[in-house]
Length: 147
Image 1: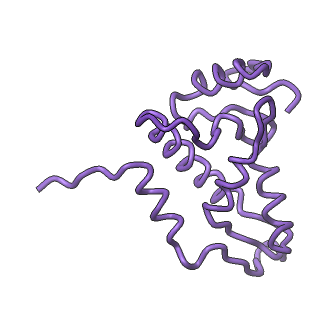
Image 2: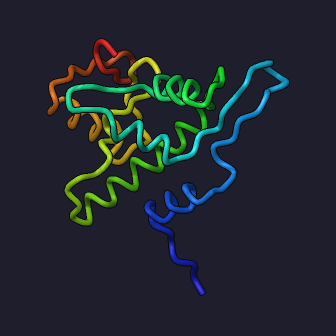
């Protein structure tokens, strides 16, 4: 029997149910105190970005590291959670929900648009431009001007 593909909302719910997150520890490799955030924390930071503004994954990491009293927050885990959250929000919007996490306002470090978000760079670019942002192309990548 074929397995049913899980929805993004189910994947997000599973990630939020992880009891071991957030997890803080001392990293022997870097010598720094480190936090792996909970996806609910990442979602709250993404939800807090107001219209006309953007927030980078680095800014989210810096805020979460400070909130947990650590020096570093895992940018890879934060980015993965942002990716899941973006798809779950898009899925909810497609189902008719009006208020969703404004995932398009979360960009990669240095203001780069994320091709892994729903609809790729084109969808993120269109939403950001609708909110008044200027998008610049540098080579094959796109960036929010001034971010």
